[in-house]
Length: 235
Image (cartoon, rainbow, N blue to C red; front, side, top):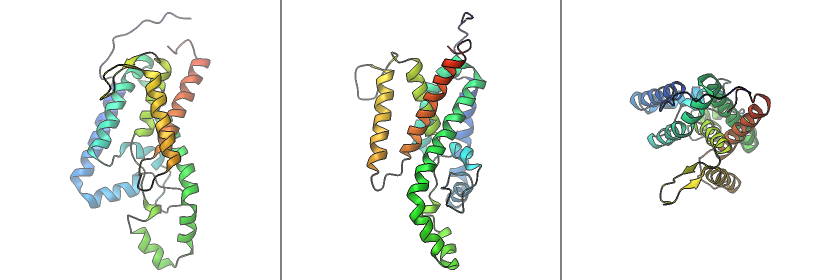
């Protein structure tokens, strides 16, 4: 096995920097252009259930670059930098970018499978309605089939899971907890909370918990696969 030579650690490596810039510019455009344009952007580029007339294949990719609020994008980009910068420094830009999009696509796939099951009664009811009523519902942003899924959280959870797998004993601090906690316990705790909330399925909870779990699963699976099949380049 080749000797691993640690290169200079970059605080803001290129892929992380560009992802933050792109997400920030898109969010700025969403807010500057107004609610009507933002709704149109969500209709075209946010992820919609397969049963929705608004669904388009490219949404599996584009939904990762849209966010619903300032705090939504802030925490996603902060977590992406916190965990992703370490991974990119470790793997290099190309491998990290592949990892990021695999996690995001995996998160979307898991979410869509669950969403398809949940939305099936709504889709069947929609198809049974007269054409005029269907048109009215399609123009209603509160109609269930029109609800968009957006955000980089699924891909970010993949980064969180990979960091916990690679650096399980790294000590980290969480707000309001005065003592450091090992990364593996933080990852396990976060995923356990997401599983609990996904199973609870509380009314009014608009967070895509299954996408978070899916992103973490695909992140762990990809890191495990790389570790088993390509040890010469995996550190």
